Length: 121
View 1 (cartoon, rainbow, N blue to C red):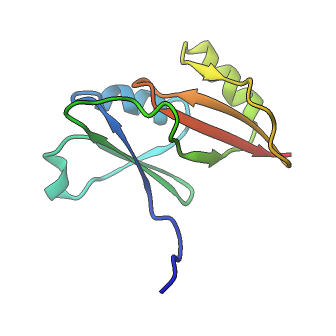
View 2: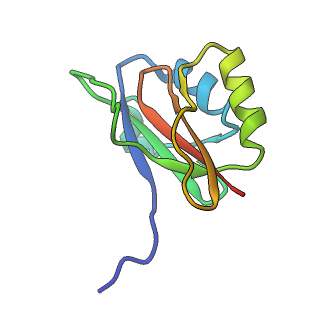
């Protein structure tokens, strides 16, 4: 047995945050919303995809944002993306030291979850 690929990453969000999630992940990070299976829709939350990366946001009753644990997404044009996200007022930490071969920054979704954005250089 071996792991073949990563299917998706799930982050938590508070109940009723679906519209805020759509605004951030579709409007600013250019994900597309994908349909949740009918039996899971009643739980709330929302799912997104961009390229081969899927991100699921699930409702957590006693929600606490993930300030350390995070998904990392490869992007192009990181500087422009960060500039756009900053102009929208979202929290950004672009003080991270570079990783060999990458420029990077951490952004925080509307719920305070940390997301790493990486661009190969």
